[in-house]
Structure formats: structure tokens, C-alpha cells
Image (cartoon, rainbow, N blue to C red):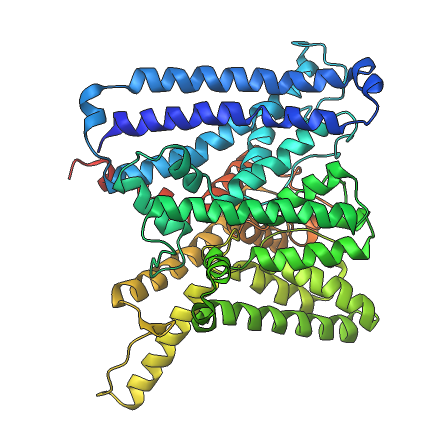
Length: 517
């Protein structure tokens, strides 16, 4: 392993992240259209936590880069192990330094500063800030803000919450490829594993760096389109339009309102966001094929067709359940059912209705689709539809082999045979995923005295699938603030595991990973 070079590049990323923390300062001018009001009131103090956070982050970044620099190490390439390490460090440090604005917005409770607005957190500041930051950067959308802060006093911080989701949506590792193009094969392979078009690792362009730029352009295009629709058609103000755009295109789910989209009660906004949540669950490769006019590739894409079918099935089935068991009208069932179906299946986590009030039939269906997620190569979490396809096709082939032992069968995706090693890997992934969910749910029940089984299970699934809200005690009208510090750290790890697709971070826990050979 080339630890010095890995930490050198990590230091570079931290420096870039330090400048990124300053971006919410641009939203300062969205606070009010009256410039006199802006400068006369105390909104200027909202800048202080971000200036301090950026300063600390830049100092740490430059320090790490300077200490880890070694001319001999820099001449050597990064290995695959270095790729695993660097990918994990990037996400972990993004969570750590991303928590600084929350910390500096809370420290006045100890008399360190005399900030005139209410602190974000009054207790367990470090853990709560880290939880909120990791939830944002992994696009989970779970929150421990209780009560929800006054927007007028914390507009910049609320802007930062959604901005971290936007950064996490495109994938920080993918962004590293763009800002650090000299990174060698090791980290590029990891980025391909995470942000590619599925287990077959089919790239939309021959070069991973060029692929990264292409995906970023598509992501930026969606980011520019959505606020225009929300502002002009949905009658939202510019600030809220940008906030909800960041959270929608990243399938994150943070909002500037205490009760999320439900606070708006705006049918037009719900329709627009529902459509873009559906777009968020689609692989970026499909957008590339649309742009280049390669429609044949889209028609051959098994995962995309399955994604459409499953979500249509979920919406129709959920509407039926709401009409039958919850006595909702057909129009309300369609409105709330379609929104929540796509919100939870894509891992966005927006809420337009407290679905915890629905029947157990609807809850079970929603819980199952929370695990599923969207397409690979999208901004969604979950196990991804491509894995479900591979596993089900493999099971179907195994049944046929039992009937006709001499028949040679292979799993095919998009008309191409999938290597047996890949198939075995997907079975291993699913088993490990379910095992982690079960063990983590049991640990939560051990750590917490007053948590119900469904609350613990939905908290674990919601965290590892990067969804956000859950059932019972973590319903849309509640949050994760009542959990102990130990439970919050566990849930943060699950968020990171889910975002890095398990194997990347778990590999670091194996003793063999740190051996020379």
C-alpha cells in the first residue's frame, strides 16, 4: 500500500472541501430582497460558522498534505487497496468536516461565542452534528434536529444541509476524479465499482475520467432545470426552490420545512418533485444514451425496464391498499400513494403525508421497496434493481437445472452473459446486506430501552438504504434525536456502509487488508 500518497490525495480533497464549505455564503443574498434589512439585521452572524469551518478545514487539509508528502511515494502508483482506503477516507472526512458548521452554530451555549441566534444543538453537539452531516453527505436525509431550527435565523445552515446532499448525490469519489485527474488506476477502479452502470462495470465512455465529466454534466443539467420549474410553475420562492432541488436530484430528502413537503400542501410542487424523484432513480447511463440518440441501448436495458415496471406496480398496489384499508378517496390515494411510493423506493425520503398512519399492509410494501432502491449508476441507495435481476435470474436458472441437469444456462443482462464470479458476488452482497440489517437491528434494541422492534428495523433499513424516514418512532412527524449517542454512531456507520456499497469500508476492517501482500 502507498499510505503517504493516499493521505496526500485525501489532504487535497479536504482542501477542496474547505472551499466548498464557503458556498452557502452565496445563499446569504437570498435571505431578503431588501438589502437594507440584510445589513441592518443580524443575518451577518450566520456567516461566522462557515468562515470558521472553512478555516479549520483548510488548515487540516494543508497540514495533512504537507505531512504526507514524500517524493518517492508520489512516484509510485496507487494500488487497489489504496483505492479502498482513499474512497473510505473521502466519505468519512466529508462527514467530519461537514459537521463543523453545525458545531460552530451550537457552541455559544458554552459561552465560547456570543452568537445572537438560537443554537442548533444544545446537547451532544459533536455526535448530533456528525449524524446530521453524514446523513446529508450520504443522501440519507435522516435528521436529529429537534426542534427544527428557525429558518430566518439559520438559512445558511439549512442551505448547507441540502448542499451536502447535492455533493453526495453525484458521489464524492466521482467528483475526486474530476478535481484530481492524476489519480491512478486504484481509486479509479473503486469509483467505477461505485458509480458505474452495474455489476458488469459497463462504462458509458471508454475513459473513467471522461465518464465522470459526462455524469456531472447530466447531474448539473437536472440541477438547473428543476428550480426553474419549482419557481415558475410551483410558485416557490427562489431559496426554497434551490433547497428542494439539491435534495431532489440527489434523492436526499432534506427540506427547509419542519414537516417536509407536507408543510407546503402544494399539488403542483408534489407532481414536479414526484417526476424528478423518478428521474433520480434512473441510471445516468440512460440519460447519456438519450443525449447521444442511442435508443437501442435504452430498449435493451433490462434494469431500466424493470425499474419502470416495479414502480408502476408499487404505485398501483399502494393506491389499492390505501383505498381498501385506509379509506382514502381515489384522488388522495393517487396523490399521496404515488408520491410516497417513489420517495421511498428511490430513497429520496420526502414526505407529503404521515404514512405511519397507514395500515400495516401499506407499511410492509413500503419497507420492502425501501431496501430495493433504484437503478445502479443513479443517485439512489438500496441494493439496486440490477442485483435483484441477477439473483432472480440465477435462481430461475437453478430451478431449470434441477429439471434438466444437462442444460447449460447463464445469467444474461441486456443480452450479455454475466460472469459466474459476478453472480456469486451478488449473492454474497445480498447475504451480507441482510446479515448487517439483522445484527444492527438487534444491537439497536440492546442499546435502546424504549425502541419498538419496527422502529429499530426501519431505522436500520432506512439508514443503510439511505432513505431517511421510517415507521413508528421515526415516522415523518418525528426524527432520530431520541436515540443514544452509541445508536447514532451505529446508524452513521450504516449510512456510510450503504453509500459505499458495504465491501469498500468492510474491507478496511479485515486484518488481511493491512498486510503487505
